[in-house]
Image (cartoon, rainbow, N blue to C red; front, side, top):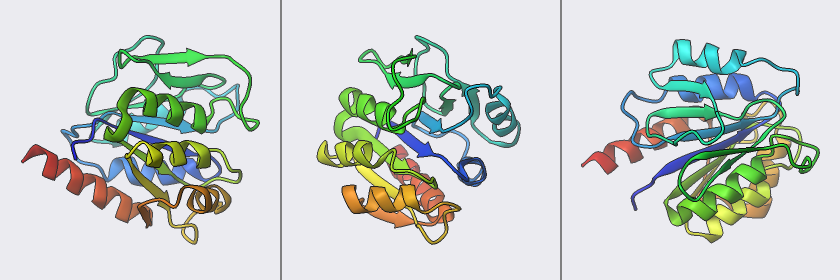
Length: 191
């Protein structure tokens, strides 16, 4: 299977988990990564700037209508849902909160399934709610690859556990295992 994109959802404890995951990924990644991290509506783009400074990938806050390109990490801006449009650009929306969250992980995952279908990798990391479980389930139903962080390693285990219970993901791994798997998939895809 050739994969075209990775979507990641995180909440409580997500900054540390994303830092570990994104800095472990190699330069020249064949896929774009789209990230929803639940953050305060008043946050600045510190996380994107910080991760960009320590990662081999380009990490940035997503812009409306921006083309989605391999080797880039796009982080949803505060108080906006981030969607993947059919023309593989980013859409930003201020529609109602979903499961008390904007940005919503489920909104990103479900729009990405519509665009990428079975060529999508979905990852649910640490968090203290159930956002992402329905989206990960939709990715699995479409034939995409699904991954949840090992709940015992997560700072908040409710979100990965909810995803495991609902979506029955293909892999349940610690952060280092997720990074290793994505690196292997990238290497195999280049062959």
